[in-house]
Length: 371
Image 1 (cartoon, helix red, strand yellow):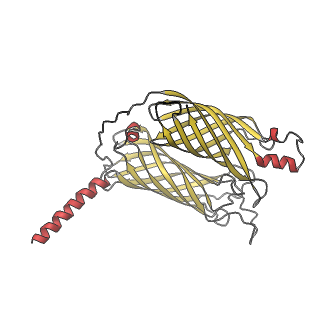
Image 2 (tube, helix red, strand yellow):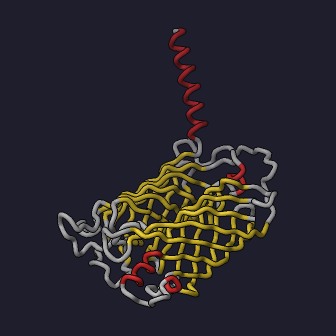
Image 3 (cartoon, one colour):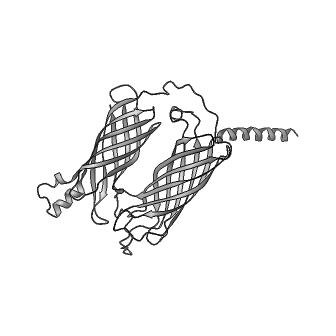
């Protein structure tokens, strides 16, 4: 009898501890119906429809850290997506793994509208191949491992503190940043319905900590980045050329947790210079015709020591081989130094994927400073 009592007491203690630990954790499942977006005239046949299943492990924060309180208790987690594009012999299938960051647009007691995105890694089962079978149709992806980006917006109804139902729009992108050709990339848009389940509760008790710097002042900063990437150019399985990048911009932090960005972006393509020299084009002016300059605006979500950035720019100077009208950058920065005082206020390590007209140009790895 005494042993039974002790076992019951231990089980009850474990159950209470487990419930406290699992409070705020949930799982979400989204069946997706969509279609591949044809964004280039040399695109292969487009499937009539595509399908995916998106599963997320989620955590509703409770303000245990400063960034959680500043962002009004956001939800984050890890997502995995399995995609069947519809023509397996050309597109193959994709498994994507990415971090989940969700932010409310409109938030009510029962009804909410949210935005969620994440940049991660994806595995494509079918790639372009020269040997042993020469593939003339699949000109989309040249590598199995790629960048995987997922954007989702959802309208959600909370049945109770355990079950939520929702419907929304989603957009996914897969490419390798021209690290290995071909690299048209695969963009898929579509809609989904789904359910979210929290075993304990979707509303864990708030930590209510007294942080010394919960509210940060709005401030202007001068910032800069320098970096590089590698690309294949022209032919598949050819040499890789460096891309040298530099960015100078101003930023305005607002609301303690976001930045508005505006500045100038520079990219120098060694591949274009080599192409011009080999073909005796623009003789003596190869370097002058191998760089790209753009003015851009952007936004950064600051989540602790991680920044999630997006840029949209218009070129004022193009390389001789490029006629694209817009550039885009998406990526992360990690704050090595993040302080309010001193000359050097920020030092970051950055990773971006740069696109021209939504077609990936290169992956950029850089260091950034802020004064």
